[in-house]
Length: 173
Image (cartoon, rainbow, N blue to C red; front, side):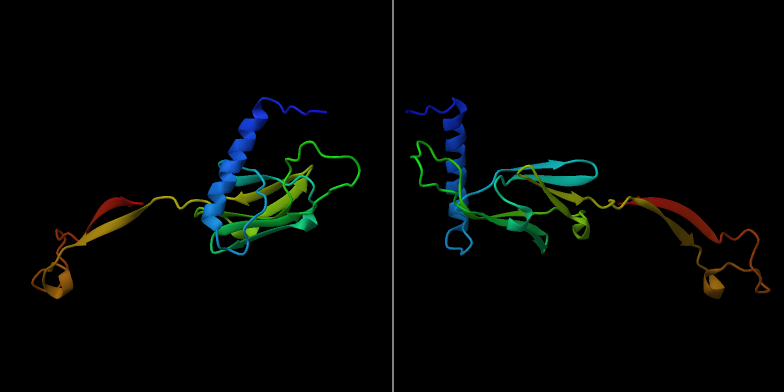
């Protein structure tokens, strides 16, 4: 029996192999180099970052999700499921351990990260924190003269026509 994959399979396989080559070049010499790399989609909304990781064949207990120094790390392992019956014509699924790391942007709430596994898809949701809004700060100008900066009459009383403070506003970001 000859198995002919769909037309998109060679392209997808080539894309995966190129990714593995580049990933291998980056992680070469590190002890945690992956044998396979699960595919990830990262989506951003107004409220959160959502990481969707394909981990078919893994349970939640097989996956570790951690953060340290602003880096999200997803680790896991998929065991080989080789059966002695029959022979394989095509093997495309990867097995072994994997590690994926992602630098998180500023403005996310690391202490509120949630991770769930459903139908072979790990969903990691990271809420965004409220971004600081610009505020207006009042800047005052004080008139200088004798008696600590206040203009006075000859008897030491404040002159009624003396300016005390002029307010200006400036917006900062």
